[in-house]
Amino acid sequence: MTLQPLLNRDVAQGCLEAADVAALVLSDPTNIYQATGFWPQTVAMGQAGAAFAIVPADTHACVTLITSQFIHYLHDVEAPVDGGALDIRLFTAPDGLEGDAAPPIFLSAPPGGSPDTLDALSQETTRATLQRHRPYPDAASALRDVLAGTHGTIATDSPMIDAILGERLSYRSAAPFLRRIRMIKSPREIELMRHAAQNNADAARAAIQQMGAGSTYEDMRLAFFAETGKRGGIPLFISTDSMTMRKRDGVLREGRSFQIDAVSHYAGYHGDYGRTVFVGEPDPVVMHMVEAAQCANEAIADALKPGLRYSDIRRIGQEAVARAGYEIAIPCAAHSVGLFHTDEAYADDSLHFRKDDHLIEANMVLSVDCPVLHLDATGNVHLEDLWLVTQNGCEPLNRRDEPFIRI
Image (cartoon, rainbow, N blue to C red):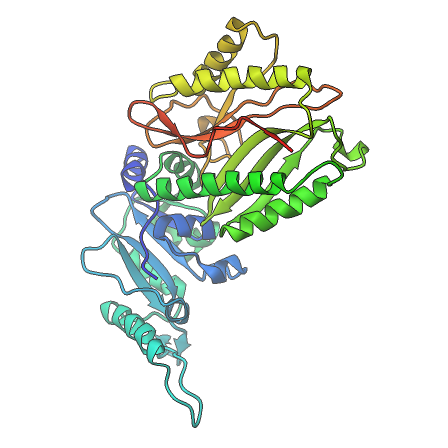
């Protein structure tokens, strides 16, 4: 496994230096993953403090991953290279009264057995990593050593880090910085978002095409989960129909329509896809609402570019609908998508979600969300795609050739 940081280091530098913060110091699994490209399995399993990531504000300084020697070996992680974007520090376990690091642990051949020649390669890369830096007895001592030369303020995602490092440093919450950084994707993140967006849309469409009159919403949910898994993704949800669905019998009926909102992720990055599904012949009233949503969606697609704000997206879509003569309410909302379904900075760096009117910049990935705020007896409507904002405009990250689906 070859690791590389996923986050946009240039954006991180701008955010941190503007606040006079020397580094991000991270312990949350998602944050470590974005910082290093390494998914810290033991932390995700509940072992807080078993891995850390340090992201210096200065882009000339490498990101550092701290993890267990045995996990490094078990996951066959490549040794870092001189001058690379990532350095790795490994810990084993305390050994003796002096607190030295215990010798590294590797799997050996059983009595009478033969050594695994491929395992020797994994051992070699871990030994090479240990030759770069001595092993530590635990993750906390590695963290203190890496940050020994750091002064001033750091941003952390857990009070555990503050407790480990003590009063020598000043601390700020990393969350507001991370939310801002995640909004502008690195080239590697854009690759992952392309894959996630199309995978998600393909899985949703494949699941829906398996349905027909007499199928159930639960059938569709299970099919979406299965189709997502086939494509290497992890499903989150597929919402269907209206808020009154629980009072229905859960069966797809001929002549009805329903909206779907499908969300899954691939390698941690999310797809978000919305469509209207007609069971049989489309109802004219619902089709009229679909056409209004299409009108808004197309107007926004033509206008979306750097320099606009979220409020401009809403205005452009709603003005297009009004000009076309539709008396249909559509929010035409934008939100950033990435490691989370809604992955954006909160207004005034609030600790809880507060929607902000963000300036749109190149390399953002946005959902343009056009659900219709009406419910007819025959169904309701949704239309949602993911867009990459480019230097001069935008490009869709999922297929848009079918704004509705008929089964």
